[in-house]
Image (cartoon, rainbow, N blue to C red):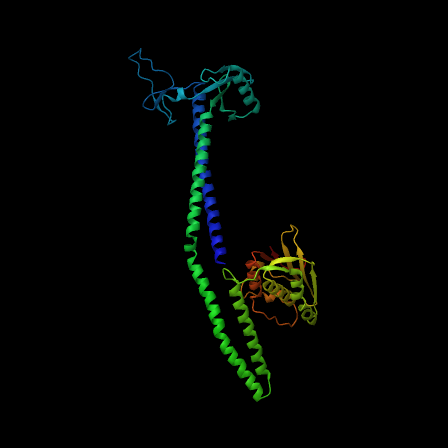
Length: 430
């Protein structure tokens, strides 16, 4: 159980970390892609606003739409406006590779400018322009180029910018961030595994104290129970047995049964329970363990059917498996509807790798909510599972907990479900 708790802690922490990693890496790359595309669009807007060319930038971050003319010293200098496109400088126009396609109002290409790019000819530029005009899009990506369209007095202007360098940068950034993220994820997971024992130490200590308390209390209570039982027998020898002595003996029997099951549960939940693993005929074991309950079912007006596939073999603790069958069968008989039916089945699963033990009983009103709670200690939903009129249900609410512990000690799974008016418990024995 401790190892299972530790594994669950590590898995939950690893999954949470993975989600955070994906969010961080995805967010960083998303921002990087958005900013790169925005910078490209800003450049395209500058070129479109200046009819297919870059404006002149002054060294102080101011730009002119036209060169200064100093021939007339008396005329005032042209007004300067701050450059709204920060981050661009005098060298930007020499670093940017682009070509321009012009079209008239009818969508016919009238001119191309490929003087700022070497990888595209005039005919290729025309093909790019036609493709964009036919698509009707105003911006996007075509091959290695990002484009944007604008309106002019004579028609349309389409500017294509070479973004291969930006794409390569984005891809490198993505690969580097993923590599760093993966390395960090592995490192943190290793640290989680190393320190997981320390993290769950308080829970482990509490669980160990609980097991020790159950064991000690069980042994301590046995002595007074034995004394009470002996005194009761003496009273019955001195005087005739009466309802009080009979009640005392019944309660002693009940307490002895409870102690036995508590000690059995504590033993099954140890890290390495003392199981004798060997190959045995599980078909015979299931039939032998379930058969004694046929008479019990009949006395309660119920029908028990045992459907066991012949000749099945299983590697496990035969005694524990027999106890598992007894617990599931007794539980089905106890909680079946009045005049109901109980079916105990043993068969090979569809994948052929497991042996399934199934105990089902009729149940018109199954428990509501999370059915896995039925495997919790001392949990009994008698209000919904008890259907027999006037029948008092016994048990201690830990039988299914013991069944679950037996199945887990064999590294297998047990589950329950309610369907078609049946309550079904299935142990998938691997």
